[in-house]
Length: 266
Image (tube, rainbow, N blue to C red):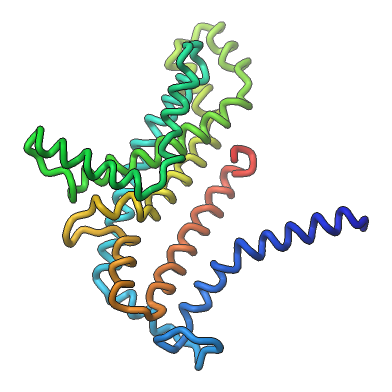
Protein backbone atom coordinates (compact mmCIF):
# COMPACT_ATOMS: atom_id res chain seq x y z
CA UNK A 1 0.00 0.00 0.00
CA UNK A 2 1.40 3.36 -1.03
CA UNK A 3 1.80 6.18 1.47
CA UNK A 4 -0.76 8.37 -0.33
CA UNK A 5 -3.39 5.63 -0.20
CA UNK A 6 -2.64 4.99 3.47
CA UNK A 7 -2.98 8.69 4.25
CA UNK A 8 -6.28 8.81 2.35
CA UNK A 9 -7.70 5.85 4.25
CA UNK A 10 -6.51 7.33 7.54
CA UNK A 11 -8.29 10.62 6.81
CA UNK A 12 -11.45 8.76 5.84
CA UNK A 13 -11.32 6.73 9.06
CA UNK A 14 -10.85 9.92 11.12
CA UNK A 15 -13.81 11.53 9.36
CA UNK A 16 -16.01 8.53 10.15
CA UNK A 17 -14.93 8.57 13.79
CA UNK A 18 -15.71 12.28 14.12
CA UNK A 19 -19.16 11.80 12.56
CA UNK A 20 -20.13 8.66 14.45
CA UNK A 21 -18.63 9.45 17.86
CA UNK A 22 -21.55 11.69 19.00
CA UNK A 23 -24.08 9.08 17.86
CA UNK A 24 -22.26 6.28 19.70
CA UNK A 25 -21.98 8.46 22.81
CA UNK A 26 -25.74 9.17 22.83
CA UNK A 27 -26.54 5.47 22.49
CA UNK A 28 -24.11 4.54 25.26
CA UNK A 29 -25.47 7.24 27.58
CA UNK A 30 -29.02 5.92 27.20
CA UNK A 31 -27.98 2.76 29.09
CA UNK A 32 -26.18 4.46 31.99
CA UNK A 33 -27.73 3.72 35.38
CA UNK A 34 -26.82 7.03 37.02
CA UNK A 35 -29.31 9.89 36.73
CA UNK A 36 -26.42 12.34 36.42
CA UNK A 37 -24.17 11.13 33.63
CA UNK A 38 -20.68 10.25 34.80
CA UNK A 39 -17.78 8.18 33.47
CA UNK A 40 -17.34 5.38 34.06
CA UNK A 41 -21.01 4.55 34.80
CA UNK A 42 -21.89 2.63 37.92
CA UNK A 43 -23.93 0.18 35.84
CA UNK A 44 -26.21 -0.34 32.86
CA UNK A 45 -30.00 -0.33 32.73
CA UNK A 46 -33.05 -0.09 30.46
CA UNK A 47 -34.75 2.15 33.03
CA UNK A 48 -34.63 5.30 30.89
CA UNK A 49 -36.33 3.58 27.97
CA UNK A 50 -39.20 2.55 30.24
CA UNK A 51 -39.33 6.08 31.64
CA UNK A 52 -39.60 7.55 28.14
CA UNK A 53 -42.30 5.03 27.24
CA UNK A 54 -44.45 6.02 30.21
CA UNK A 55 -44.27 9.77 29.59
CA UNK A 56 -47.26 10.91 27.56
CA UNK A 57 -45.58 13.98 26.08
CA UNK A 58 -43.10 11.84 24.20
CA UNK A 59 -45.76 9.51 22.80
CA UNK A 60 -48.00 12.42 21.78
CA UNK A 61 -45.04 14.29 20.36
CA UNK A 62 -43.98 11.28 18.33
CA UNK A 63 -47.46 10.85 16.86
CA UNK A 64 -47.75 14.56 16.01
CA UNK A 65 -44.28 14.62 14.45
CA UNK A 66 -45.15 11.55 12.42
CA UNK A 67 -48.44 13.07 11.24
CA UNK A 68 -46.89 16.40 10.28
CA UNK A 69 -43.90 14.78 8.56
CA UNK A 70 -46.05 12.42 6.48
CA UNK A 71 -48.44 15.12 5.30
CA UNK A 72 -45.71 17.71 4.68
CA UNK A 73 -43.66 15.14 2.77
CA UNK A 74 -46.60 14.16 0.57
CA UNK A 75 -47.38 17.80 -0.29
CA UNK A 76 -43.78 18.96 -0.61
CA UNK A 77 -42.63 16.06 -2.78
CA UNK A 78 -45.58 16.50 -5.17
CA UNK A 79 -45.00 20.24 -5.61
CA UNK A 80 -41.21 19.92 -5.55
CA UNK A 81 -41.19 17.23 -8.24
CA UNK A 82 -43.44 19.34 -10.45
CA UNK A 83 -41.19 22.37 -9.90
CA UNK A 84 -38.03 20.39 -10.67
CA UNK A 85 -39.54 19.07 -13.90
CA UNK A 86 -40.74 22.51 -14.96
CA UNK A 87 -37.38 24.14 -14.26
CA UNK A 88 -35.31 21.43 -15.95
CA UNK A 89 -37.44 21.37 -19.11
CA UNK A 90 -38.17 25.11 -19.45
CA UNK A 91 -36.12 27.78 -21.18
CA UNK A 92 -37.40 30.86 -19.34
CA UNK A 93 -34.85 33.52 -18.48
CA UNK A 94 -35.76 33.57 -14.77
CA UNK A 95 -35.15 29.84 -14.31
CA UNK A 96 -32.00 30.35 -12.25
CA UNK A 97 -33.69 32.90 -10.00
CA UNK A 98 -36.70 30.64 -9.42
CA UNK A 99 -34.43 27.70 -8.61
CA UNK A 100 -32.51 29.85 -6.11
CA UNK A 101 -35.78 30.96 -4.54
CA UNK A 102 -37.00 27.37 -4.14
CA UNK A 103 -33.71 26.29 -2.56
CA UNK A 104 -33.59 29.37 -0.33
CA UNK A 105 -35.05 27.73 2.81
CA UNK A 106 -32.02 25.42 2.94
CA UNK A 107 -29.74 28.43 3.43
CA UNK A 108 -31.86 30.16 6.08
CA UNK A 109 -31.21 29.10 9.72
CA UNK A 110 -34.19 27.28 11.19
CA UNK A 111 -34.69 29.67 14.09
CA UNK A 112 -34.72 32.64 11.68
CA UNK A 113 -37.24 30.95 9.42
CA UNK A 114 -39.39 29.97 12.41
CA UNK A 115 -39.40 33.52 13.77
CA UNK A 116 -40.25 34.96 10.35
CA UNK A 117 -43.11 32.50 9.90
CA UNK A 118 -44.40 33.24 13.39
CA UNK A 119 -44.57 36.97 12.66
CA UNK A 120 -46.11 36.29 9.24
CA UNK A 121 -48.78 34.06 10.79
CA UNK A 122 -49.60 36.76 13.35
CA UNK A 123 -50.19 39.27 10.56
CA UNK A 124 -52.37 36.77 8.70
CA UNK A 125 -54.39 36.15 11.84
CA UNK A 126 -55.05 39.86 12.21
CA UNK A 127 -56.05 40.18 8.56
CA UNK A 128 -58.15 37.03 8.22
CA UNK A 129 -59.39 36.70 11.81
CA UNK A 130 -58.27 33.06 11.89
CA UNK A 131 -56.15 31.02 14.28
CA UNK A 132 -52.97 29.90 12.50
CA UNK A 133 -50.20 29.83 15.11
CA UNK A 134 -50.42 26.64 17.15
CA UNK A 135 -52.69 24.85 14.65
CA UNK A 136 -51.93 21.71 12.68
CA UNK A 137 -52.46 23.31 9.23
CA UNK A 138 -50.09 26.16 10.13
CA UNK A 139 -47.44 23.70 11.31
CA UNK A 140 -47.79 21.55 8.20
CA UNK A 141 -47.52 24.60 5.93
CA UNK A 142 -44.28 25.56 7.67
CA UNK A 143 -42.84 22.07 7.25
CA UNK A 144 -43.73 22.04 3.57
CA UNK A 145 -41.12 24.80 3.25
CA UNK A 146 -38.58 22.21 4.41
CA UNK A 147 -39.70 19.42 2.09
CA UNK A 148 -39.96 21.36 -1.18
CA UNK A 149 -36.27 22.45 -1.33
CA UNK A 150 -35.01 18.93 -0.62
CA UNK A 151 -37.29 17.54 -3.32
CA UNK A 152 -36.23 20.13 -5.88
CA UNK A 153 -32.58 19.46 -5.12
CA UNK A 154 -32.75 15.66 -5.28
CA UNK A 155 -35.15 15.37 -8.24
CA UNK A 156 -33.20 17.97 -10.23
CA UNK A 157 -30.03 15.93 -9.68
CA UNK A 158 -31.90 12.83 -10.85
CA UNK A 159 -33.19 14.65 -13.95
CA UNK A 160 -29.69 15.69 -14.97
CA UNK A 161 -28.78 12.07 -15.60
CA UNK A 162 -32.08 11.18 -17.24
CA UNK A 163 -32.00 10.02 -20.87
CA UNK A 164 -34.86 11.60 -22.83
CA UNK A 165 -34.68 9.11 -25.72
CA UNK A 166 -37.39 6.90 -24.21
CA UNK A 167 -39.69 9.89 -23.74
CA UNK A 168 -39.13 11.02 -27.33
CA UNK A 169 -39.77 7.51 -28.62
CA UNK A 170 -43.03 7.25 -26.70
CA UNK A 171 -44.17 10.64 -28.02
CA UNK A 172 -43.27 9.67 -31.59
CA UNK A 173 -45.35 6.51 -31.23
CA UNK A 174 -48.42 8.60 -30.44
CA UNK A 175 -48.45 8.70 -26.64
CA UNK A 176 -49.96 11.83 -25.14
CA UNK A 177 -47.86 14.02 -22.81
CA UNK A 178 -49.64 12.77 -19.68
CA UNK A 179 -49.13 9.15 -20.77
CA UNK A 180 -45.45 9.80 -21.45
CA UNK A 181 -45.06 11.34 -18.01
CA UNK A 182 -46.97 8.61 -16.18
CA UNK A 183 -45.49 5.58 -17.95
CA UNK A 184 -42.01 6.75 -18.93
CA UNK A 185 -40.80 9.82 -17.05
CA UNK A 186 -42.18 9.00 -13.61
CA UNK A 187 -40.77 5.43 -13.48
CA UNK A 188 -37.34 6.74 -14.49
CA UNK A 189 -37.56 9.37 -11.72
CA UNK A 190 -38.54 6.81 -9.09
CA UNK A 191 -35.09 6.68 -7.40
CA UNK A 192 -34.98 10.46 -7.04
CA UNK A 193 -38.56 10.70 -5.80
CA UNK A 194 -38.03 7.94 -3.23
CA UNK A 195 -34.86 9.64 -1.99
CA UNK A 196 -36.70 12.98 -1.84
CA UNK A 197 -39.42 11.37 0.29
CA UNK A 198 -36.85 9.98 2.68
CA UNK A 199 -34.86 13.20 3.12
CA UNK A 200 -38.02 15.32 3.36
CA UNK A 201 -39.52 13.08 6.02
CA UNK A 202 -36.34 13.10 8.11
CA UNK A 203 -35.99 16.89 7.90
CA UNK A 204 -39.60 17.42 8.92
CA UNK A 205 -39.65 14.77 11.63
CA UNK A 206 -36.53 16.13 13.36
CA UNK A 207 -37.17 19.85 12.86
CA UNK A 208 -36.82 21.79 16.11
CA UNK A 209 -35.87 25.40 15.34
CA UNK A 210 -38.56 25.94 12.70
CA UNK A 211 -41.22 24.30 14.86
CA UNK A 212 -40.40 25.86 18.23
CA UNK A 213 -42.52 29.02 17.87
CA UNK A 214 -45.32 27.44 15.83
CA UNK A 215 -46.63 24.72 18.16
CA UNK A 216 -49.57 25.20 20.48
CA UNK A 217 -50.14 24.37 24.12
CA UNK A 218 -50.42 20.62 24.60
CA UNK A 219 -49.60 20.00 20.92
CA UNK A 220 -45.84 19.73 20.62
CA UNK A 221 -43.72 17.69 18.28
CA UNK A 222 -41.20 15.20 19.61
CA UNK A 223 -38.12 17.51 19.32
CA UNK A 224 -40.00 20.29 21.17
CA UNK A 225 -41.18 17.81 23.83
CA UNK A 226 -37.55 16.74 24.32
CA UNK A 227 -36.46 20.36 24.72
CA UNK A 228 -39.22 21.01 27.26
CA UNK A 229 -38.16 17.94 29.23
CA UNK A 230 -34.57 19.17 29.26
CA UNK A 231 -35.62 22.34 31.09
CA UNK A 232 -36.50 20.37 34.23
CA UNK A 233 -34.56 17.08 34.07
CA UNK A 234 -31.03 16.09 33.02
CA UNK A 235 -31.28 12.30 33.17
CA UNK A 236 -30.51 9.95 30.24
CA UNK A 237 -34.19 9.71 29.24
CA UNK A 238 -33.53 12.09 26.37
CA UNK A 239 -30.64 9.90 25.25
CA UNK A 240 -33.05 6.95 25.15
CA UNK A 241 -35.54 8.92 23.04
CA UNK A 242 -32.75 10.12 20.75
CA UNK A 243 -31.54 6.53 20.36
CA UNK A 244 -34.98 5.46 19.19
CA UNK A 245 -34.96 8.37 16.71
CA UNK A 246 -31.55 7.29 15.42
CA UNK A 247 -32.76 3.72 14.94
CA UNK A 248 -35.90 4.86 13.12
CA UNK A 249 -33.90 7.07 10.74
CA UNK A 250 -31.26 4.37 10.19
CA UNK A 251 -33.95 1.78 9.43
CA UNK A 252 -35.63 4.18 7.02
CA UNK A 253 -32.36 4.78 5.17
CA UNK A 254 -31.53 1.08 5.00
CA UNK A 255 -34.95 0.17 3.65
CA UNK A 256 -34.80 3.00 1.12
CA UNK A 257 -31.32 2.01 -0.01
CA UNK A 258 -32.52 -1.58 -0.37
CA UNK A 259 -34.95 -0.59 -3.11
CA UNK A 260 -33.25 2.56 -4.42
CA UNK A 261 -29.48 2.96 -4.33
CA UNK A 262 -29.08 6.34 -2.69
CA UNK A 263 -25.55 6.72 -3.99
CA UNK A 264 -26.96 7.07 -7.51
CA UNK A 265 -29.12 10.06 -6.72
CA UNK A 266 -27.36 11.75 -3.79
